[in-house]
Image 1: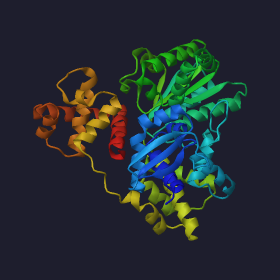
Image 2: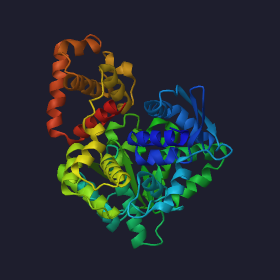
Image 3: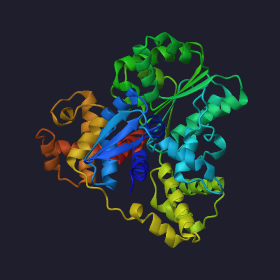
Image 4: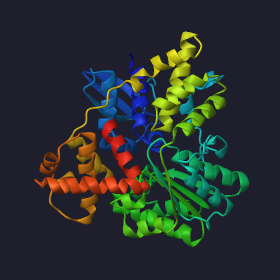
Length: 458
């Protein structure tokens, strides 16, 4: 496998563990320059991208590459494209754009994701006509329709949360595209929070912060994707807080997405949390079987592909937690059929996605559970296992005990031992309490599902 194929295969793995906005923000114009003595050098477009990838995604990238090529022991980052034009995500996709015919490959689909409006940053593919509504997202969809009818007044801000790959980005961008369609002069700006943070860093460095403020405060609709990342630094929260207030006071619409509800973002300042909770909060859950089936048929119809009903059913029954994985499975099956020149059937579908269906459950441990929960609630791991009774630590600790009991089948005494030598009755109480809350709290169900996804994706 050459370096171009290695990078494309690694990107396919990396995308599954990231939100779509994060993937598109940080992996544009990247590629492998060369591999020397077990070290892969990845080129990036600028210094900020290098710093962000090095600090935040180094392990993710290395893990993805090593799953494909065990010869790679480490990765380094360089700024700029190497002489001679090394392979990059965007350049490789551009070559394939000319091949769009009856079917868009995974890479060509990725290219479409980069075809965004230069002023609004909106992707024209994200519209309501190809957005599938089901019980898992009907509240968020209804809130979106209300915003379109009365922007700035009905639900302001509109806060939509849910796990990775469930259609949040599609929904919030569809609002922007629909408003522009209805109001051509409406000023819309979509921005992933990581990009917003990058712009603030650059503006501070170049002493252009006032220009950046004017840019965002001149819009009629601001769409901020993955707001949870902003909560990690006080400066970013401060800048967004002032931008939020400036728009809100002028009755300009604000739409926000996150992987969790405001109260679960532990480092979010109270002044921002109260403003988010003052609007409309809607969740996007996991699609049921009927909805997954409809999504697959809608995707096939858009691509103009004829697929047998039993193939649709097989995919929908076996891929349950992620719409992006659904579409990825569909793409792989269709591509395999084209490469083999054989018609689509249930046997070929089973062969193509057998790795997903029959893959053994990844090994997990108490350590992985504690790490995932600490990252989700943005607290220190040591705070989970100490005897502190601070409110911020009690709930995450109880969830950790619950997951150890139900995912690892650990005994209550062993669970207590892992949390500062607590008595087994404490573990019993925690597990029963979370179990009761799960039966009545949809939000807690979503939180625990996101945490479990992180545990098994790691």
